[in-house]
Length: 216
Image: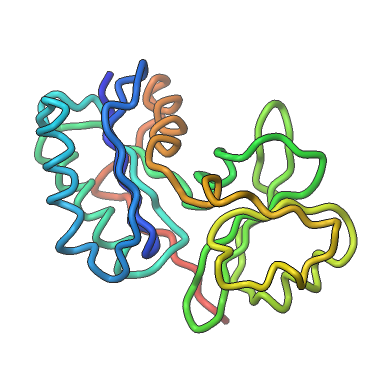
């Protein structure tokens, strides 16, 4: 069952094609603010290379956010257009859930982070339960200073967009994921969505909307 994954939630974008037995194609890149001109060509090139057309797709997985307003709007709009035009099942997945799903088990609290602009960070807290990382409450907008303060006691594993922080500011109780586990991959997005598609837990394309976080 060939699925297409699309993640344009932040300037780090990713697309993939996965049939369930193998990843046919995957591309992750730093898009900046170029999602509009880059997304469709990357998807088209990937599908041609894999010998796949829209009629071959059995599902589309898309990152819903949190993330940037423009990035989420472009990715979701593209996914919804394909879904509606070709009657392809669609599933939306939390951006932070993608990051958490990629990480190995640790006996600590996991913080999945993405940049929110203007020196702000979106943080999602996760605990390991029943074989996977489960969200502990809703994500929030915060800052590196607050995250450093929050992690002064206890054990923490941090993953995501962490390239702007001085890692020496964290204590020995904090483990930061290596670079390969900090890049959101659309193949993992597909893996999450496949379980829902297999059970018929689909989203209604016309009703699906991006998940934004706003400061209060």
